[in-house]
Length: 115
Image (cartoon, rainbow, N blue to C red):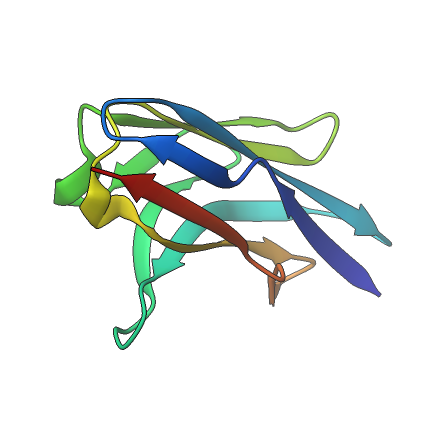
């Protein structure tokens, strides 16, 4: 069984920063893509950023230049550094990873940005 556990969410003022972490654990043979999604109340879950095992990254247009995704392949960790946060970034952030050719989700962590 594979688990993804996020941490690092919280309340921050607009313009501030937060760093999210996600740790994959369990029986892991390979992790291809790791990424972060977010879901605001009443909205669909959307991709924020993703990173492949070869460090190729992809970002939603709304976060380009403000968020940075990175990963530690040796420790099965993925990070999301979020700078210049805006109230519209408020959402539950979910970690997603393709582990052993199957996709898994974390439980989510709340990020709230006050104006």
